[in-house]
Image (tube, rainbow, N blue to C red):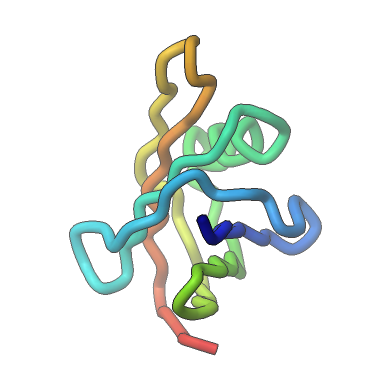
Length: 96
């Protein structure tokens, strides 16, 4: 199994992603991460409507830079799994 990672400068470096997929548009990505500091930060960003200048997703196939990101949805999973789901909507997407 290949690991996927999330990086948000000054927030988290290489946070493991449980699942990642294309969202409802070409600038949208759905991610699932384990509960922790990064997920708490993303929940606060979603609630505040924070625009995140850069989010980097590293998958087995590519590295994707998301610019001017808004966390449009944030959902807690079941207590058994302690995972949280987020939708990241980017102003632009670059494959690097």
